[in-house]
Image (tube, rainbow, N blue to C red; front, side, top):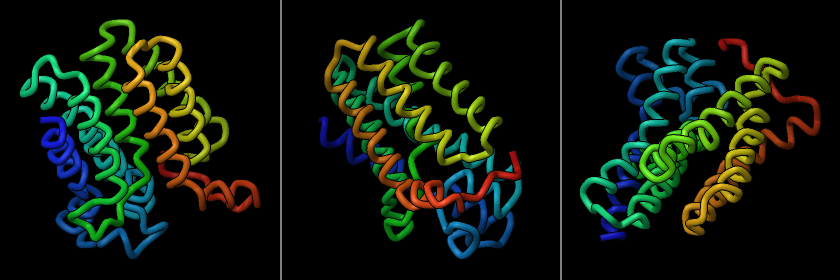
Length: 204
């Protein structure tokens, strides 16, 4: 059942909401514009703020819904839910339905964190592993205007908090794996940050 949960999570994570919204409502394939990334930041840059916010929310739902479905359909199997959420993050980055060219997993990571907090760490987990890192993201973003830097710092903060509060090692190491995936997917951004050439977000 764990493998089935992961497969479903991956398929759900593979839904390219940025591509769908761009083509259906704006007649644009955002892979041909901006960074070419299928995520909320590039959607906002290419299509405008409403599209960027919508894509970010839908991408976050990937991680949350994957956990929720596994939690309810495979009750009592924490591992299945945790790994389904992780698979959704992988699917977002390497989507089956978009030639394995996806986003950077930031929004999906937050959806994953919310799912873990709601179903396995309620109620205080919502504050510590979701709300606090999310607030940190927006604070750093306001100060720097760098989405990439804000994303990496805030997801890493969530990972550290998870290791402090959570006793389930699978949850901890899965969050760490998602954090490393987020950082890996931002490797080009890291180089631009180091070179002083990273673009600042203008639509937020």
